[in-house]
Image (cartoon, rainbow, N blue to C red; front, top):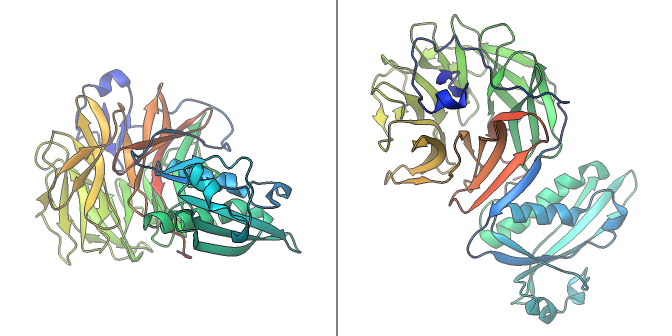
Length: 449
């Protein structure tokens, strides 16, 4: 059985799941039961990569001069970042070690099939800082494409490597890199639920908040400084907003009934939330401080899982107003509206929409032959592409460059995070040794972008 709670769909029993129903009357009454494994909450995510693009860019990354003196290899992180995209093929640099343009013998790299070459060095500075210098060389043109010199404390080596990988990715693909972004997710072990934030590659995971009651529906503020989420700590769903640096938080939706499914407006000034206090499950707008409640939807069905368009002029959401769960679009106006445009028509079950950053498409969960898969639909043509073939995918979240989609899935009865490329060619599994991970949300680009 899958039941809407807080705009999410929760799995209780794999056998019952195969005969899924959309239940209206039990919307706010179900207790989450699907997380059962115990272990410490602080653990690193492991990443497995499957597949890759048909034509990958061959790139060689030479270990930077003197990086062996550091506790963290910068070039290893850069290589792992690029490889995860499925767009790059790493060329073995063994036996060659140029660190400056004048030391590069381009024919050596051309013979190894490399189109691009990364070289650099690290320089130890005082006060525990290092300067990292790198250059990206075009092997065919025998010239430098780009370069960067940054100074960071030794505690920020991975962050520096992610930034370099972003620069390389953008120079070679023309798209913005997202290696410096963060992800949020909920992990359950034993009787503890933790909302965690980690780097996009799963490292540096930190618990933002922990409770013995469920935490669901994390949503990043547009500037990446706050998370909205739903907590059941007071035995009912309440929407909180928490500042990451100070851990300060406030309840922004604690109205009668259920308060759920927060979604930020692109300017960060408002939240869309789902409330039941005025009857049924309907979408409302509130200011980011919890004031200025305004009803947005009015229907006889369940309206939930709102998601703002990048221009902030409309939302897409899930509703069963037509008899089965489908995705609709509705303009943001000053008056509540019962008018909404239905967007999905393939199949009888389409939920959990998330806009791409350019607003031209959205990802969602599509039921396909009793499997629940990640799909993408173009807004204009309404063409649908199914990207995964697993059984129980949920909670898709676009990367801020629109090239990857983060989602939760289930393997051997355990929840893990996965990511799939926009074309479906590359997949990643992100997991820990023990525990259930759900509810992923991909954070925005960092400010320096």
